[in-house]
Image (tube, rainbow, N blue to C red):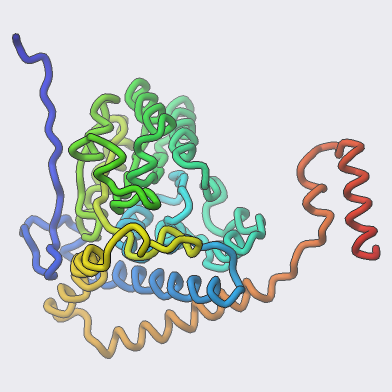
Length: 357
């Protein structure tokens, strides 16, 4: 037999878990240490917001919430690489990418508080709303990418899916479309090792998740998702390829979900403490902090001051969310149909009657 094709998946990492560089050919943005400080500050802000959001849910002031603890490097790396005119199609956990793109934390809180006005968020109005149906956002992004190509627009569609979602047919269909039509499309598979309670090893036989893009003819790379330098560098490369007409990419960002799946979950039922403890040794914040301190561009005093500022900003967003007036009951009817069916008109009238109006 003769070989007709061969493939390999490369792995990208710059900053090891101990905060030391594992290679010296840093991308241009990382050579400016102050730019890394800004990325670290954004990560710390998102972690502050995330901690506060969980506390709000635990005290009955927020609905079910999906924490992003441990994903800060992956999410900030994705969002910071994008241009305003690009399109982001998130799933439901990528707050860091959204905040970098201009979405306000109060919008996120409104969404998880059950108020759909949160989907009418600040930031790019062409970005897609949160998408809980697993994998369908990948098709949305592929469709946007096709529109960009047909219109001749130098824009890129970026989407995220989890390790579990990477096994969905929607995801594979998006990959195939991106390859068949050479679309400006970047799929980030955020491999946090757990699809709710299903471990990575149990939901696919693939050696890597990055290789799932090979069958579609996409450029594929596995990245240390806890290393923001690597994530940002991989995103810069993938977006540049897409914008220049060279097609789509699949990036597997290897990280770990340090929290429960959502606040409705108790991960202690299906994973042991030793695994989580080991994952904390590889988390993204500590390695970047160690590196910045060793480079003399960050210190404990600056971090304490920034944490205080993050707390102030987050409290401001929380107060804005809590002070938002609840919509009247009739809006659940008023924005569903151009013309409300007769039976729903009767239900609307009953709802108003029950409220004494």
